[in-house]
Image 1 (cartoon, rainbow, N blue to C red):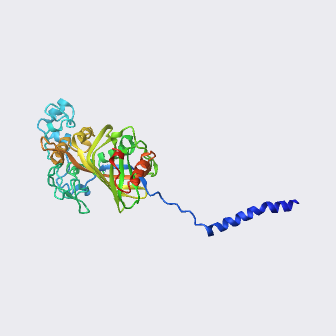
Image 2 (cartoon, rainbow, N blue to C red):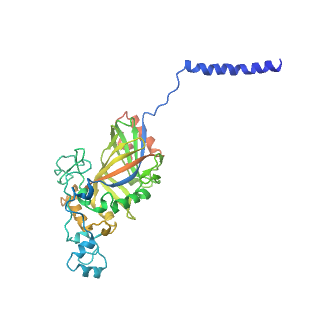
Image 3 (cartoon, helix red, strand yellow):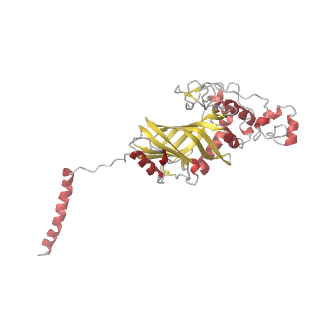
Length: 383
């Protein structure tokens, strides 16, 4: 056999292989790929701030003007100049120079607190009533109406809305926003497990937890999605799990009875506690936006808030805000006194999609799938 014949015989299998490759699609169906029946959505919160109904210049909601700071209050006080010379600080307005940050209940302001004069606010209906009547857990209060016409609870608006520091261009809002972006203490991730349909799913498992990783900004206020964000397993008490549902792309969770989270507040590390905390988020392909609401525990809130920036940077009066928070507290009555110890609060939050690389996502997704779509047992849900 010469070289030409050997080459011809060698090529024959290749010819039949090529013919088979062409014919195969005519004989066999092409494989298809689909998303697993139960999957997870990861999010990392990128901004978090108090949210109120506010108009330019506050003309509608704050017609009486804005708050006064400690310096203005002290100078309007009889013998205020002498007290400043004696104690050396405008915040030292107590009878014996006690600080307004730490003893606000000892101080009486000269200028009245600017009351909110609107019935409009953003927020969620936390107490389940339409009229704000007292319940077993809440005190009677005047509810707000949201732009969508829903009756909502957001009494913190009565405390902070007429403070320039917490308005859209205010110092405190800007400063806290920067701390939220840059400090790992403020990192917050949301894991939505057991998702069968991103648009409509009657039952999902939602975990809200402290994260460990950085945010990466692509431009001011914009963040890169789909980066790894780990749940910080070192702090189990900052890991909270509840159930929720997705309707038309909006996630709404069941209340979390007590939710603690770590915070960095004006350079001071601290904690926050929200009672009956819940999320309502509009999900998108690369993130989410919506509300985080609940009843702010006032004792823990003041231990953090009172360490904030000097009132002159607000301007605002710590004594005035503390007194307003006590007056408007509407949640979780003290059984001995009947005084509510928490105040309904709404935060506006934004998020980008994230990859959460621990095994908990798969575990919770598998449990939901095995339960046939019903709620999994609490034994397998991380608290």
